[in-house]
Image: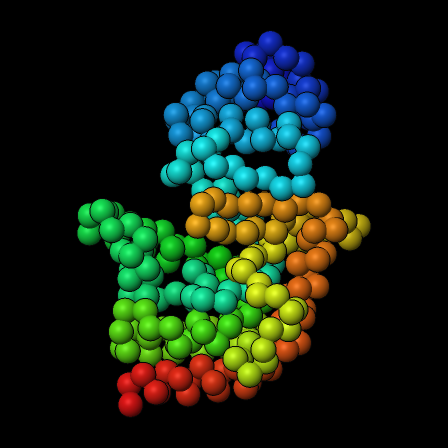
Length: 268
């Protein structure tokens, strides 16, 4: 469907629709979003999610907490992740989802969703494994720079065999040219003075002129909901925080050696 045809159907000008679709509109009208979802045959979940995002876009706050505005089965972060050029993460408690083995992911999915059927758990695991293609694909894989707290290596998930296999997977992934993996050891203390929760900075690359294709976003996952920070100063603070924990971490070779050592301990 061409832009003029779509614009005619929602009774708007072509230039107005083009600005909306390219993110240059000064104002997003809920009516336009609803009508576009209708003519593009979006399902109920997609429509509800986009309506929620449109409502949130009008809020001039430094953070976005989508909560009940977005359906639970519509994951905003996955859309950002799929478009990422680089992901910069700090994970204190568990292995990053993009690096999890099926067995490790299954244990976490079952703990988090105790009422799910086995088939539903399998779907959750398969979805996580599909996401991992972002860093393993042959054509332009995304860059991953992750710091794991030593806790993630030693916290037992599933059992010794599951952990051993998971750590071997980590060690192997750390040899990929697009993956940088460091471990922040317990001996490093708390580099920033305060404990730091998990976060991921999503960068989308730059155009020919060196300008970002899209502004970077910090994703903060919590037990009650997800938050997205977009202001430049907030993003820079998290880049600085990541650099601080990165500098306090073991280098890549020492990190890989520690991961393999702990893997052997699980099966000794």
